[in-house]
Image 1 (cartoon, one colour):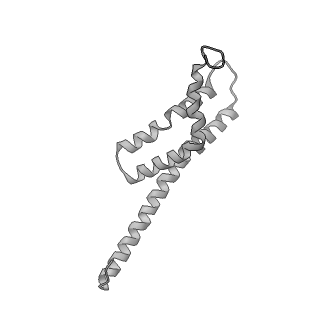
Image 2: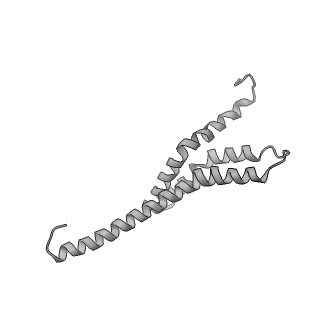
Image 3: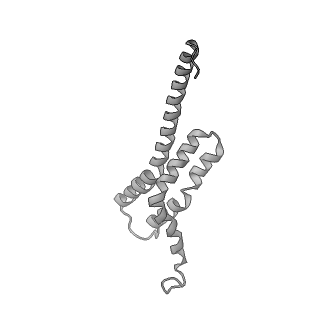
Length: 123
């Protein structure tokens, strides 16, 4: 079928892997911000399910076939860049930045709100 072979349908699994490189960090940053804003199971579940296919397929491509000799440097580099840099780090940045901004805004609102009420000024 594809490329003249009938068993090359598995290449379709690699499209999410390729699209994850440019769009994955933005999606994971948004998921991290969503987790920071909304407590509960739903945002955290989506943070795990969202990268499941692209990261899982790319990990399978890195590990399989099992009979080949694996280079530890390649696997560590893959884990550092694809899993850590493209998936986990943007989530942490989105979560941390959102929590920091909410804390600073809350502290400012609490300080300025008390001061303006004491002096009789509207907020």
